[in-house]
Image (cartoon, rainbow, N blue to C red; front, side):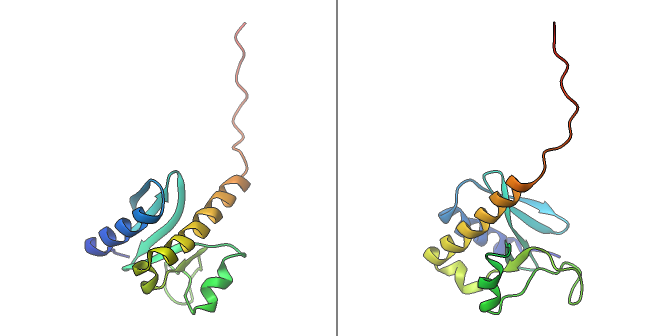
Length: 124
């Protein structure tokens, strides 16, 4: 689970051309990618993966793209699918795929239950 620094720089530059406030964060040897506060992509082994759900997964599968499997073939499948390398070269196509991945991240975030924080005490 490593990412070449040249690949990382290239991907972040390309994503920065089509999405707002792109930032990255090292994670377990890979790289997590955010647009604003939304975690929508990751990089691992010099591949880029976008967040998917039931509405977008078929788009990736139709192109023969594979899911992210951090523990190798036969291991757990995560909700991220590989982005075709040629997509990184085509900014219009990249924007379409990024928009879908960010929308999935936004939807998943909205569905997440609020934490059960204790109620605040009122001052009298």
